[in-house]
Amino acid sequence: MSTESQAAETSFAQMPQGGLSQPATARPLTAEQRQRLADAAWAEEDPQVIASYPGEFVVPYGRRIVAHGRDVQAVLNEATAKTGRKIEELVIVGIDAPLSDVPH
Image 1 (cartoon, rainbow, N blue to C red):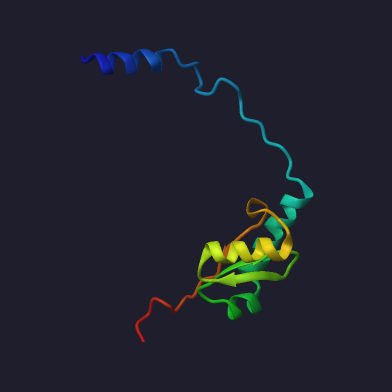
Image 2 (cartoon, rainbow, N blue to C red):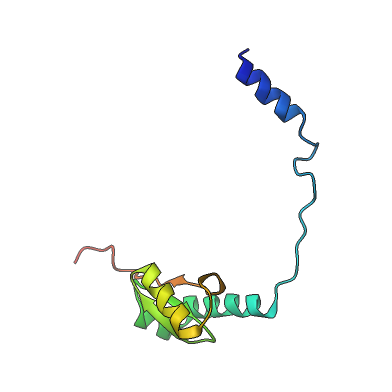
């Protein structure tokens, strides 16, 4: 057995039983997080959004599309400018274009 293998076995053997040293805890979502999830679900399912933005990325915010396009970074930059929110506070959704892969 190589020295590296022995070191790996020793490190693994020293790990606490059960893997993590502290159990993971779940916290309830904030109202803002719930709203982002609801906005994303709305954008993914709304027939008008699906028909208006096929093959694009959209940023839903307050049940309206604040930015859309094919370049993710440009869409996020536009959405941050329009909403005043940080990128990590926004949700981006890809709208499927079901027939885009079918040759014409």
